[in-house]
Image 1 (cartoon, one colour):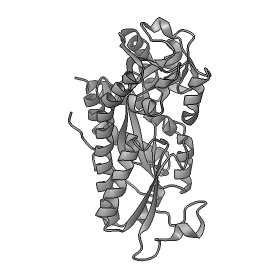
Image 2 (cartoon, one colour):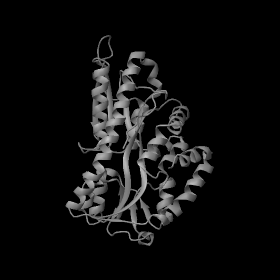
Image 3 (cartoon, one colour):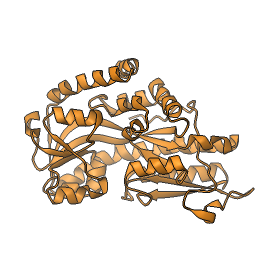
Image 4 (tube, one colour):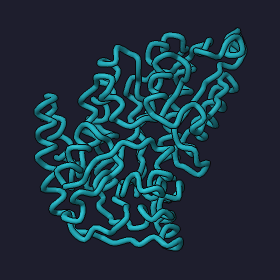
Length: 343
């Protein structure tokens, strides 16, 4: 599978705040001439094997090398917050410089068009997903994020969080098996609408608390990609051991920086950032693609039961949701562009 990277024609930015919120005088180190600029890069996953960590470590490696020591990058794996909402707020306030978040948190900041990327059954393969995010649609989304956030956020790369499947206390043989089943997922927006119409009961549980919630029967099922839920041992709980490959979402994640600090960059610093962002995209996607099969095999070896399922009924529910959202937010042309890239 060919791994592509985000078109570097997209206008990009970097948060270069010398004084980070809450960090005091210590954060100002590197603000002087000839001293390295401190960059805090964060994601919400705590596993050291997570693809997010792979991507940000590559970002750190390349940015420091390309800038010849002009940047000092510090990567945080869940230590600055395991909730994406925390990371988005810290990015806006300047308390962190680079974050990884899902499209849903951009819609909460007023960029509704990005919700298109979270629509169930929008993408039919990784090749289709890449052709969308690495092409004109991805470039348009990046522009909308910057414009509608009043330059609070700039997108420097599209990452993948894998293809998401159902896992729960029982296997799904048909869509009817979802009726009345509580499922941990988003509780608002198109994702919630999809699961509700499929018969499930969307339930809000923080990612860091989901293992315990599954173990203690607070929630009966969840949905995610193999690398993410297997690394958290969700498959070892009674409410996570049955995996049905619904493949409902080829998941997009956004690599963001603070746009309002762009003017503090020199042209050379921008070039270093572009190279680092591009390298991180390649590394993170490759890690996801490789880990999907690896962690599926691990889950099965550790007692999980996996089955395939006919997704026709699921797609039938998803398509009207796709059309309605596009109409509601005035993004019909973007939706048609995405569909037009299917093989």
